[in-house]
Length: 382
Image (cartoon, rainbow, N blue to C red; front, side):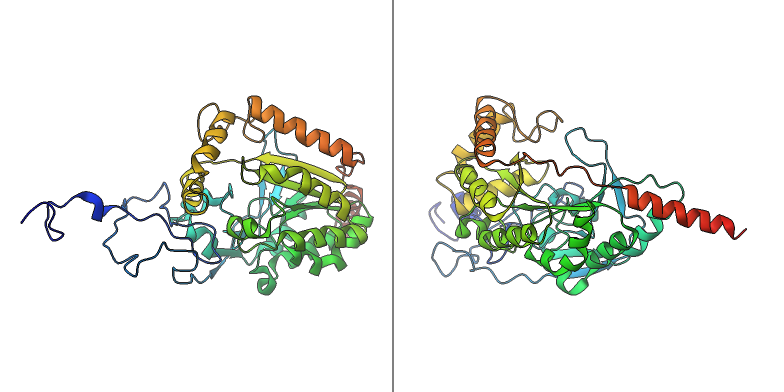
C-alpha cells in the first residue's frame, strides 16, 4: 500500500484537515467551542462527510439549530460591580445567554460557568430567570437596600426574542415603575417599544433613559455579525420612536471593529442624531477568554481575506495581545489607532451636537420618599 493510496493509514494528513467552519443561517458563532471549565477535551476531526457533496459551504448549509429555553429560579437578581470604567454600580439581567447571537458579545464566556459552550450554546440555550421580578421587589423593599439606578440588560439583552413570550423583563419594569425606582436600559431590540406605556411616564419623571446599540448601517454585515437582533434600520426607527415619546435615548457604537464596522462610525452617528438620539458612546472590540477564538473563527468564515489585517489592528490596540483587561485600556484600547479613533468619534459628536445635554442623572427622590412612607406606616402598626 503506497503513501498515495487514499486507503493507506500512512496517507498524507490532508484528509485529516478540518474544513473551515461553515456559518449557520441565523447564528453568529460558527463553532461550538468548548468552555474553559470543561474537563473532557474535544478535538475537531473531519471524516470526509462534512462537505461530501462538494461546494464551499455557504451559510445555511448546516442544519438549523433550534433555541431551547430553560426556566431558572435565581437566588439573587442584582449584580454589583466596582469597575471604574463602567457608569453604573448595579445591574439586572433577566436572561443568561442571548439569542441575538452577536459574535463579539463579551458575555459569551459566562456560559462556561454552566458547563456549556460560549459558542452556539450561548445563543441557542437560554436560561430565563422566571422569578426575577419577585426577587427584585423583595430586594428593593429591604431596609438595608441602598437605592441607586439599576442598569438593565447590560450582559445579555433584556428584550431578546424569547422575551416576547416570557415577558420577564416586562414584569421587572412593572416593579420598577410601581416603586418609582430609576433605571437605564441598553438594547438592540425593537421589542422595547412594547413597554412604552411604562417607560414614558418614568422618563417624564427622570426615572428612565435608554441606549440603542448600533454597530453598522450595513444590513448584510449586521445579519452575519448579530443575526437575530433587529436590523439597523429598525433600530433607527426605535430611536425615533423613543425620542418622539419623550424618552432620553442615546446610541452605543459597540463594538468598533477595525476594517469591519469602524469605517461606518461617522455614518452611524449621523443617522442616530437625525433619528433623535442626544448622546453617544463607543467601545472598541473586546475579546476576553473564549470570545477571541470564536471571533477569529467568524472572521475566517466571513472575511477570510481581511482576517489577518483585522486581528493585527486589534493587537496594535491591545499591547500585542488579543485582549487587555486593564480598566484603563479594555474599553478604548491604546496606541496610535486608538487615539485616532477617539479623535474621529469626538469630532463627529461635536459636529452633530451630541452629548451636549446631560441626561445621566436619574432622580431617586420619589423612590426614597415612597420607601420612607412605607417604613413609617409599618412602624405605626406596632
